[in-house]
Image (cartoon, rainbow, N blue to C red):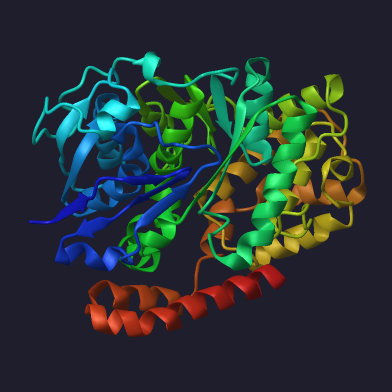
Length: 470
């Protein structure tokens, strides 16, 4: 029987660690590393039922993809119910997911203090399945609040999270940034992490906001090359983006939210109402996620990307004339101005009445010709989400009575009016060599895969660099 067993989480100051024991048939999806998460405050007083949430949030989607059950000592009752709802949504979205059960010796409803639970707790629900047991009450007496904000927002400084900040700025949300996905735990990414921390801290300081920084190896504890090899054929993006990141990123915040008394945790929407993409962060996933004292929210799903830029533009005009966005796919210390996301954001800023150069993008009219060329030549690997975003820009061009600022801009918008966006996406797909390697990895014995993996990873990394450098 396929299964994943989690040891009781251990805590040392602000560091959480948990050993993961998959059954033999699932070992290929894990690297053997314990999952660790580092916070910027002590989590010694956090109950076991909350401490296990960051781990469950990473491993449960892998279990569901294989029809496996997950076993833990203790789980928060509210989160157990949330997992059942998230599993239902993900299985409805992805046909290849089989689902599974969660079994816990103890299910806590949040009334126990951290110290009491870590000394044993109660045995109210031995062997319970996913979502059973526990009343999901708040148990605020066990949580810390002090003078912290009672809301928090996952924040990078990009369009989506900045829009969510503008929408909720009256709440003075704590800004939460994570290292472990786009910025890896590898020492080579130390500078990028320092840059992100510095930028988010400066943004927060200017607005008298708190920050929370979280670091994890969760994604390196999962073997993403093997997950990609098995499941890329079913999804438009990678494993984490298409399946795991909504539950995964929010779950990592649970101990932080508990120690700070966070009632509402916001994650900005990538897509918007009317786009039904198989994506790991959606309202029918994120809005289900909760644990004792905290409810998560998928924010700004009602606004297309261009309307989010409109909201930011209004905020710039009224309150923040020097606001700079950070969306670049290739660097964190500013925007390169040459990647697809930089170009797309710069064009969107213009359509919202802002000068891209005043808000972080070295964009001029001369860039329109390069942008069209790179889209037509497949310089970037694009997915359906990029197609929808360029379609959103095209719709704004059609709707607006704004005159193009130059002949180059007019020429680009004329081309975009009739461009076949589906063809641009399909022509930008990964090369055949990558598809062949993934197909081989799916059925390779462990020993063969372990030998081939460095070659596969090197080829993938090499292509990424070549494409970004074109």
